[in-house]
Image 1 (tube, rainbow, N blue to C red):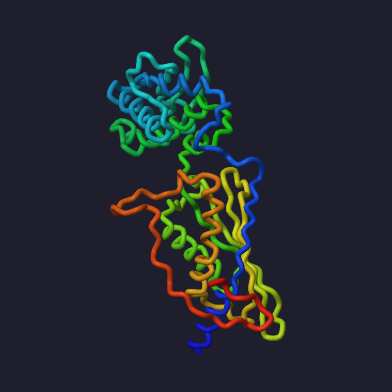
Image 2: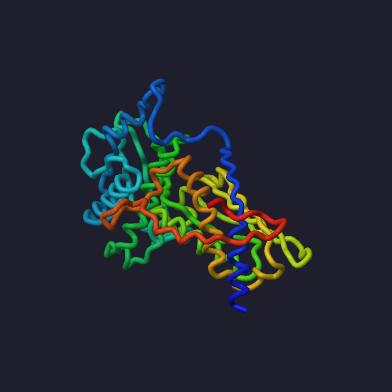
Length: 333
């Protein structure tokens, strides 16, 4: 029984046909350089030369005000690549904040809130906003690390949005939102454990290409998913189609990979096992091609082993597989 299941799995994997539809929706992003005709962005030039001065916050103790300002400045530099410090006299922008303790305000949603204002050094106000801080009095008084991190993250992102505005530049948008890597979604429509197995197998396959992955879909530059459709049994066989989709930011569809074959009826109703690995391996090159066409610089994981980061595991030995008469041919050798 086990031998027959293995044979069915190999026949299914051998008959997969990968059709790549590299259909970008509109012009491809160009995040790696500029044409000679592109005009420089004066805002970016000024921004990266001068940056943001984050003043120590008022309305709280001096040490706490300094710690909060440093947390925001560090986030602006680390996550958004905006030069920032608590003493940056030549900065283009100045960020100020005032802490409000709301112990006597029954309408306040949190004990602590901060009023922020971003100004240009020439005196023009860019924007202002209020921020609620979910903290206990003990956490606030002792400057808990979790509170400082939360203020740094949320304030830094908000300020970066003020500065960059509605930019169409992919690098700017991804840096602004802290996006990195690829998120692999759970597949849909598969019988048995196929939905989970396909996601797990594609995660392993992409990682084997040296690509950076993420478990947070909101932080991903790209996300990959599959939809499986199974036809009705016909003469002991079933048609199977797996459509992989690669999406970019804002759920923009970047391309698809289509796999199709006929398998013995009911052979995929239980555990997919290594069938999922074979399916993912057959689709990986096409999916990587779509991703790299749009932005390869964000994908490669850091090289921690001394060798090339794009090194792939050795390919499994090729097997000469029997073709099912009247069905899809095996992949080319």
